[in-house]
Image 1 (cartoon, helix red, strand yellow):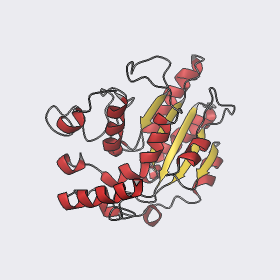
Image 2 (cartoon, one colour):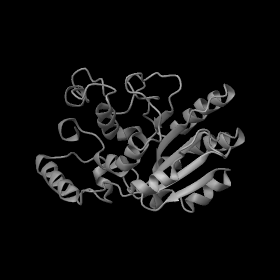
Image 3 (tube, rainbow, N blue to C red):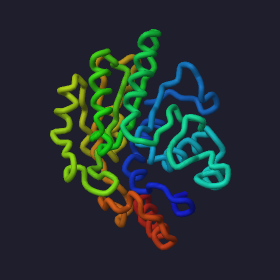
Length: 256
């Protein structure tokens, strides 16, 4: 998809296991045949530039035809645009400018709480996104309203669009910041390990705690492809035919 029409390839590789754990690990309760099911859990991809992996996953689950990933991604009808859009089946909120997903999740979670509903609300943020003031305003709001059904997963790969996070607005001590805002915090040391992710993510409805939960998943941007890993330039660099063959070979070798 990125080879044909562009995209942010490395940010997709850092969150692939997180998304698989959520959608295939029994964490999120959703129905591809009824995307607007009232009792579904809500997932918001706040780092909306990770759209490529999100579209591949939703197509695999049957939310829309897989053909769209070849014919409608940033091309043709452009049903699948360069950031996620709420008009796409399985997408709850449009993302573009970063920093808004957690606030949207707060609103959804508060509405569900007022209605007495047990739905889980999960927001996936990029760590560089957490330099936005709106994220911390939403964090305070969530704690104030005791939104225990709200989960923020932070893809802590340490890289923003052009540089390493600690070089421009340092986030550490990151877990302590979330705790000081009144959140429960779990740090997953290997955000690519399914067992560790599933242990950290809520499995029950409702959660026992009335404090929102932050899951800090330590990941590698570009994980799985040596050329991409931990290099900020691959946030925007195009994928060539040579690179795609190298990436496929490395990923197949890891699966063998």
